[in-house]
Image 1 (tube, rainbow, N blue to C red):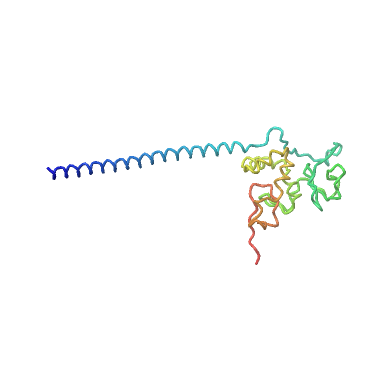
Image 2 (cartoon, rainbow, N blue to C red):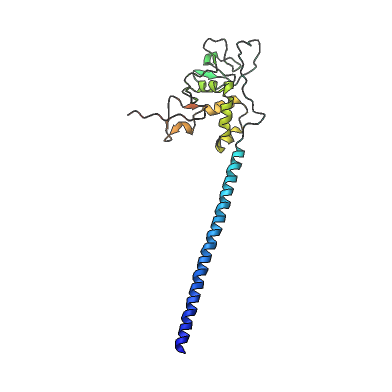
Length: 215
């Protein structure tokens, strides 16, 4: 009788052990299933968040003014009250009509004197095909060409959230070109040197290519 009890006890223990193993396996399977569900939900939320972020990055509204090309030499009778300009240049100044001129050729109105022989409109001197220029004022003037609208719209569509914050205060193409042509983190490497010192002002989509260091 005692032996039978021992056998029964052993069998009961085996059954309990088997049930425990099955319960443990069921718990693992349940947790795995829950983890998969949570992962799928998170992935869906990530995609949705990315879509929302893309929606935040929008093109300028109707109040944004794109530059309309006009030759003020041919329309000299048309009076321009004032112009905004790049201000900071010691030698050159770019105004909001796309002209670049010598600083001493800037009129009291802030506009470049279109009759000065060195004044040029939509000048891309020192600018490369990628839209990077060595001189800030030429970058602005080149960026203001009416045919750059499509490129600038494309850049705005891909703008980072940080740059999109800056757009809130930008009202027209001139202000956009002023902002784009200033040196940015895209023009810098190692935080203390320009990728291409000869083309650090960029309005284009691609940052300047890093130049090999000269030993």
